[in-house]
Image 1 (cartoon, rainbow, N blue to C red):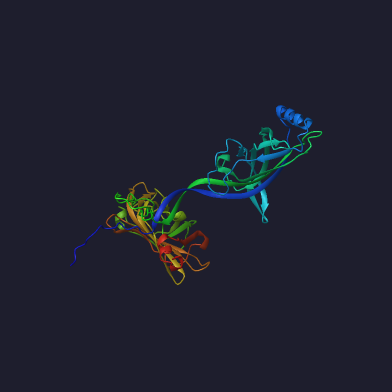
Image 2 (cartoon, rainbow, N blue to C red):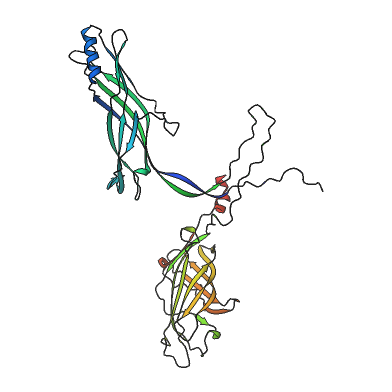
Length: 412
């Protein structure tokens, strides 16, 4: 047998990871054109009048705008306040028909403040004066910005900015300067979210392109993920909300539960459960209510009222199977039985619940067994084989899990 040599690699397989990222709720591109009359500053107007009087015409005017960076980089460059796009803090919300369907829409107002550099030159190309007028324009946009989003979730960025001028070259009776701006911009609505994704860690590449050095880097390792986060997805999920069901209700009790002899029972059974809502086990609930109509509560002589309420306190990960279109969920756990008869003590029990989702709109069914902590049956309801629950009152659905995706070769 050859000895193992070299370093042992830590697996870096594709696995479930929880990451914090900014989610984009909406992203809009738009453009706006302005045509603004400009009043010359007093000193500049006097300098232009002098140039006209001295015959240094025709005049020329240039307009310069700051570099706003384009599509990249994502963080716009600093323009010293000469090109700003600001989102108003007031967001109006109203219902607007979009593609034939009324939608709740947020209306935001973006305000552009541009300070181009205007330079006036005489016929020889000498600078007469320069100044920066402030030009403001606004635009209203309909975006997806649901409650409780504020303007802090709405970002505006100028993508491109162009400037042109229109003026009277002779300066008579005045320059009549107009500045035209073409502003291309984007508005993006963002919020920070946590996502469970299928991923693996990225590792840096070796320095195999730069000139080699004698330095040696230590191995790069990520901290190992805790095994309790993120939680596993459920393989299936279920919802049950039945009315009290009477008739053929095959419930049996073990005699050890009661001091007095048992009478033949006539019961109703009611089940309320939500297992793995949103395919997550946390928050699952289960309550089973049984009422005995033979012996009214507290009035029995030599017998007891067998009515009780069982509430699950620990619910395990369910298992689901599908045979011939019938889906069955089985879930186990522990909880407390509270008996209606004050002479019967409450007790902690284990449970096994079976939910049966029948084909199509056929009635569904469930069965449940309560046992003591050693596993001996205490209460048994063997109802899984007979459809008796209205289809809409019991729903079992499959959950798409990461192992499902990993086993789907179409994703490779």
